[in-house]
Image (cartoon, rainbow, N blue to C red):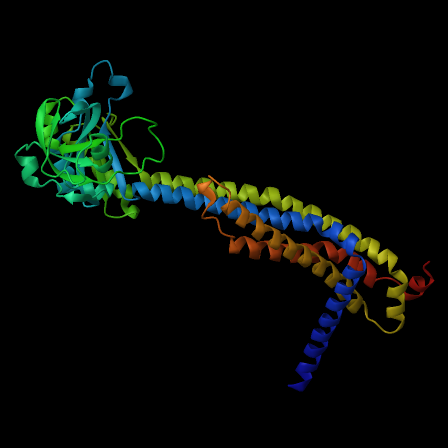
Length: 420
């Protein structure tokens, strides 16, 4: 056991001594070492800062996607391009019958609500809002869109089946129409028809879109909306059972609608679909490619820094030729000399890497605190980028320090002692 420990102790002592010698050389030539490591410092700083910024932007975009719901999809009727002269839009409009077919026969679908919209004048007492968006929905719409009733009650199946003239209004509409804080039980006139307010729905943040336009939203039972205007366009808002079944859900809906519409194998779909999960997957792929390109670009500066390290180490070997000859004359073996100069290169690169990490952490904190830039407020230092940058710095030291170290280890001690 002691026979095995002696070589290990020798190796550790040698590394410990060479690290201190390397730090001494760096300290003795502070300015030159700083300028030499500048490429490593900039490279590590750029790698961590860019990767952290990209991760922050990615997290922000994915969070925005999540607001819409990763399980959601939309279906609407669409006239194929080659049939626009022989087929009208009314021929491809979705129906309630098709909605029920999908619910009954598509196992990947959790819930569905047909949706139709129109703009009607709305009056509440003496207050009037022209062209307010009025949407027809099923009760399932609340869970699909994650918009719940905060006062009163949601629609029921009885409201749908009996075409009741009841409505929901958002809290922004209460303010614009000057209604009571809890207007449940009051009446509105929608396109001249009297509707009872049965509930108040939360206003969904539109992300600043819409400018100064009215943000009043009114919802009525889908069947009532169709009774008032049977020609409105119908879409389906659908919630899948999980994001992972998006492909199955699309295939099931395509099969059901094509079969019901008696489309042949050569006929194009008379409907279209949009699945948010597909967009999330595409965005993740694009984000990976951008991250890879960014890493390659900023990694070039690390290579440039490595070339600088090799250059300065060659200069160091030339300057310390007599020292190398003296050490060899006193019995230092070539591997010891090689280890010394290789360790100096690695230490210089690691010091540059650590300085770069410190600068990157400060940069990331600065990005998080930029005013009016919410896209970066959740940016965090990418741990993987830090590890990668430090490992890459050490690898640069080994790769670019190897040639000067080998040159130093091969010097003839007599020639080295004669060197002026």
